[in-house]
Length: 460
Ligand code: FA5
Ligand code: MG
Image (cartoon, rainbow, N blue to C red; front, top):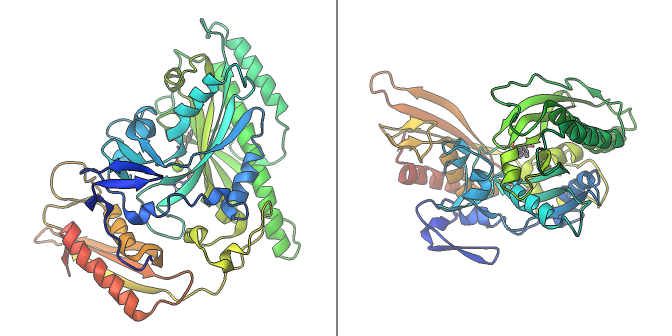
């Protein structure tokens, strides 16, 4: 029951996750409340908007070239989630303020890229039995300690995809012209489209996204990039054309807005060059996915040294919210029939919000402990670190899905004492019923007490 305070999982010596027993240690920050989301597999429930979205995307990456997979167990090693992918040791994503640790060597995956190596190894293993299957998609639940608002939830779903091409075993660079020509022939097999691509070739900064010159020629990278871009453009066009049709139908048959997409340079430790794809949707540019040319070192370390290729990763909720007009990311987890009964397999329809229950916001202001610094990670030394994600997690632990939004509304440093004061506004609202004053007050009181107990702040 989410309106009850959840016990912190790290007070136990083991955590049961998907039937496995995991030992805990001083790194553990995964809560029972977070673990209560493991195993729902919403993406397999064919009348659920996440599953409908999954199938629509998978239809653009069909057999025999692509296998479409899912990964049930969210527990991965820090090696799989970070090291194998080349995350530097000081990358903020590794910090306990951003990531749910099961123990010092294991985390709840923060992205589906944690499975890249395993899927590349699978392609290598199946080389004889399934030679055509040189690509994959994989969908899974992913976990991040993050802000609380209507588009962020600590658990969401990603789909990752990749495709590889073979090169000669010895001296692949000498044969790079032929490889590039083979990839370009595959580009020609992808049907063209007539959607406006605003910035098909953004400037790539050689320092952030260098050519991997010891492994790739420029022609190869250009061919892989073209295949990647055309494949992903087609995918978003398919998805958003379906969405526009549903929007136009519900607006009484007006013409759907023409679609526009653009490419933006991005940076990931495991691709170079890298991009994000954005879609112009109802007045705004929206980031849909990250992607790039896979770093060759990763392929070399994953039993496919003689292949090159691309990979992408996208957020399923973000796309589903646009397609189905779902206003709050918490709704995906709802068991309320008024939500679930609105969706039907293989059909994009506009969600009709059921009556919105009243919100109740409450503020809490406090002084940070004297030595506290903001923005630091609690893994870093020096002072008593304060990180906003710890406030988010604490509030989530008490209020669960009854919290719609948490935001910092004031922050100042006392001119004489140098002490820092913060004020957070917590918006309590249930998606399913009207909260009583009593229960809201009770939750807020627990938040205040726990802020003092856990973070050592002084209430104002
Ligand atoms: C990644 O997670 C990379 N692993 C993507 C990738 C894969 C790049 C393969 C290159 C090759 P990023 O953190 O930007 O990148 O997340 C990818 C997508 O997940 C975003 O574009 C967004 O659609 C979605 N996403 C990210 N954070 C959230 C969140 N808190 N809530 C909902 N969706 C999110
Ligand atoms: Mg991003």
